[in-house]
Image 1 (cartoon, rainbow, N blue to C red):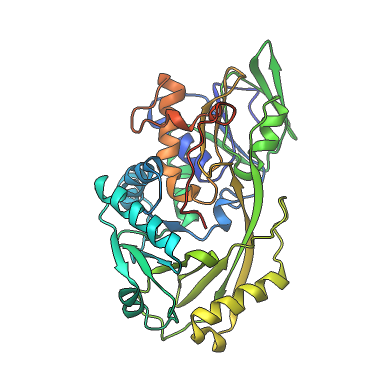
Image 2: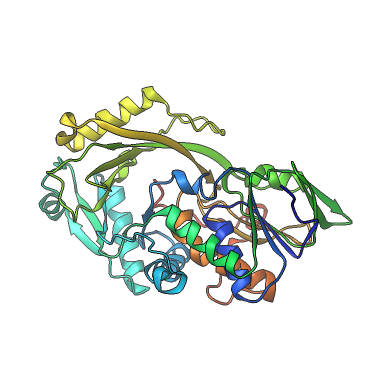
Length: 384
């Protein structure tokens, strides 16, 4: 396969961020756009291994605002792009089991309501009433928003890829970036396993691998790759179609419908940072035991599939957008596990910033790389 020798805009990473950015650059009329993905298919890295959740419920105004702009883009995806995104709005129900969480949930709901997101604050009894299949005797409170739910990562990635290719974007798989050439403080080219591409604008949207790519350009990006794993069950007729995406917050344990069964996941607090995407069978048993404790029905379930993927975690669990100290080298990364849902707006924001020099849709200027060295961290509480 031959790759172009030059590109006006070169995007590294063919997950939801790179695909969205390519589409929005092309939609704005940009030309000679090249998107490179190292895997054999688009969206098979972190995007394709996520749980598919989309939600308005976050603990900071900027993350809620990103959702306010991004989720309607998913809702209108078929109309704009021509691809059904598989958006199922059965709600997220976050459950608090200690007093600190109750206070934090109350603050979050008040902030979300002020921004126009009509999240409900539930009592422990209301949580139990809404989840009759689950054992939540210790639930003190909960939050619920009816437009939260799930969408299909592959449909959104390929929707953007196909639409961008129709507008002239070159989107290539099997092309791995192995180096970045910088001269006099400016990016000059990207070296790949198939040759070198001259480019004066490079967008690093490589997800958990963004830190490695940035290092090639001499840039330090504070990203930690962390494995997260999940499994799905056989069909469970007892689970209703409107079963919400349930998060046991203290345990970082979650459940949602997947086909006619369930998808179950849990964060490992002892996970070692790295790029291992194999399933930790021992921890899966820990996850299963915790899940059965909350939903006894799972005792009679069988596993249909399991997999692991990577979060790219920043010190404040917020993304990194925009410029670096290398002129022409930009970032769209660091989403700490909630990037898929913010992919649509993120690609649009980076197209605005790179083409216009400023964000128009959302003021995302506080999400710059320099905030880490300047101590302007914005801590997100609602991360699982």
